[in-house]
Amino acid sequence: MFNWEGQDAASACAAIAERDPRRYRIGMLTTGPWPAGPDCALQWFGHHSELAQFLLRVEPRRWGINTGELIAFKARVQDVITTVDVAGITEQQRCRFNDLSAPAFGVRWWGTLEALKQGRGAWPRELLRGFDDLPANAEVAALDNHRVADLIQFLQSQYPGPRVE
Image (cartoon, rainbow, N blue to C red):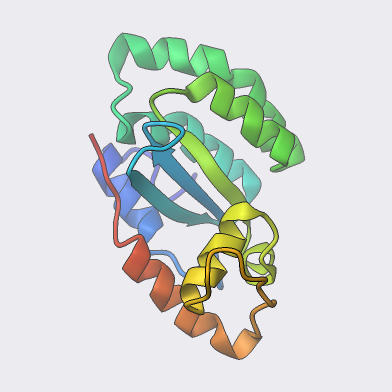
């Protein structure tokens, strides 16, 4: 059982938002409405199966999918969630999920803290540019381990807390 299970959406989101990515090393950034919504939520998980269950049980409620809509949503995304739960996170599954969750919300990024530090993917590169105050088209270098604490502070300032409908 995960520590957020059985909690209302706001409490579950708060529990996840407070986690340290050095311990909970799989991250997920959700955005709503999808694809260009102004609201984002960044959270960290200990395992891809926890991320999958949170994505199925809590994220829809964060973005305003409730009651009858929630039942239909869960049925629609179940195959993707099962694949993530069993096999892990991939770019293909992220895109499949987003096709099914739009327009309410989508997953802008998911990956490991290590992938984030390396700038692997569009959002990690964008984030590292902002962290180092670089121009939008600048190349980014992998982040040294001694800068991780500063990166975590930066993440907390950019994504300060959960949004729940």
